[in-house]
Image 1 (tube, rainbow, N blue to C red):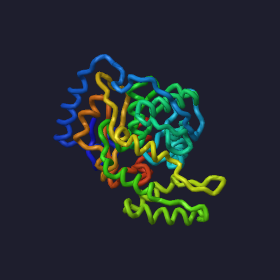
Image 2: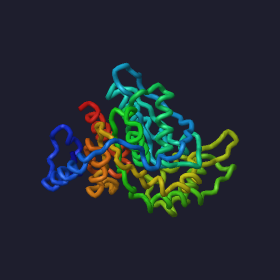
Image 3: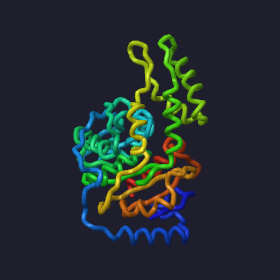
Image 4: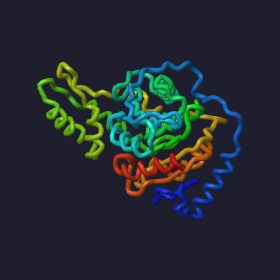
Length: 317
């Protein structure tokens, strides 16, 4: 079912759907119904080497509920999701696992950064944590990792929540190279304090990243080691090398995920639009698409209350 941009609770029956959107839905539903037996992803023709991922847990696990597995976006980390994770654990009475994707946060680095590999990392981490089945929540790049895992190993995924991205080429092809350029331009000095380093780094980033919120988000990746050396904790070289793969999506043919799926976009974000509906319905026939008004790409930070309500309602429906 497809919901209009100005609403957040269409799954509760409160969403008014326009005739045009209803027609779109019917057409896409017909296309999605033409399914054939499941096969493997075309990109999955090589052996995959997983890397060790770090995760933080919130709340207690119970025998009759699946944990929520949260996957951050590009340049993000599990740390960015701590507040949401704590509140959601209380709200839905489930354990939350917030994971650092490879080349981010505290997880291991690798030169390889394609979605089948990143999804395999998450699957291995879930199994290591004793999670037989989970509800996946992924934002942006993390949403593409979650979709890939659902399409490759559906039994691991009870439900799927994809935040402001789609199984197509993303809208950030111009933005991300500028972010990387700004990060590479920064020169670190050991005699500076962390506060001074952040201030000087922000001035340098301003040259390529005018948005203060984006700069503050990027600066969460600035770390100081025990010897007083500053660095970026994300693997900039690997990210830059794999940008084409990161903003695209693997080619899946004759495969779909038939579990409950929510695509949750920002009302002011261009990342989920009607042009993406056919591919969404082809790969995720039970998908619901809705938008949270007055929010951009970082839906969960701009509208945390509305975001948690949407996630909670979808899980409980």
